[in-house]
Length: 333
Image 1 (tube, rainbow, N blue to C red):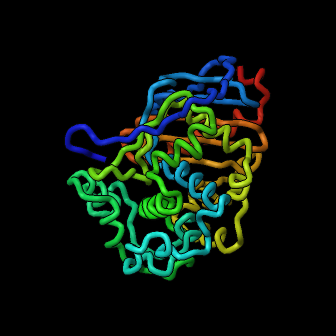
Image 2 (cartoon, rainbow, N blue to C red):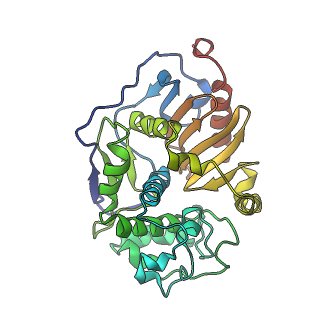
């Protein structure tokens, strides 16, 4: 996202609780990661860091990994009874009653299965995701953009990855949770997971968080987020389940070529790996969080790819993490 001058941000407080310890048992780095514009990487097995490199303790833009953090906020609000999955979007955000989101439910948006038209093509300057960038850079309000989107398909009839879905989800979370997103992330995710550092949320000029990609955090705190997911609270475990319709729609989507046998749920990607299904959080320019429940492995890679998307770099990284995950720590070292 291009901003004139210094972009506005809000602090996501880590609170005053204990920091989750990450015992270090250093190992050699992985050459394939060094060849893909890696800024930082961390590999954790059974709670201990077995390999790491790069800048680990300075905040870096997470881009669309932000979506998964917002998904966690939504899941916790659902568990607390503050957000209803089958409720219409407009029951929380009346401003969307006459938009393309009319008739869509919370679940539709959470799983990116609404029928709203929003083209997510980073290589096309005329695509909706690039129009949104320019809208925000020109100092307009994020939510005003969302009210102008239109539907092109029945809600629930497809899966299509779109940043607008997360922005609507974040708007609903703020209404249901009664607080700005930065405060919700702090209270429900960042402080409970034992973050070491505050995070930052990029906002629009009115102070609204950019829910689809505005979070910046350190690699080590992103590892702690992965460990939170690995610990599998009830709301996290539900994301690993998928119904037949959602799986079928995913297989019919453009994403299926990159993640064969996978699915998308609760703002997370899931991929069939050689050692079991893996949860992924992905951001443009090479941001990646990899969580393997069966192998008790969490891997983080923060990058600065010259292009927003690079399928070869992504698959190289996933293969490297797949190869590491099943091995005992001694064989990694």
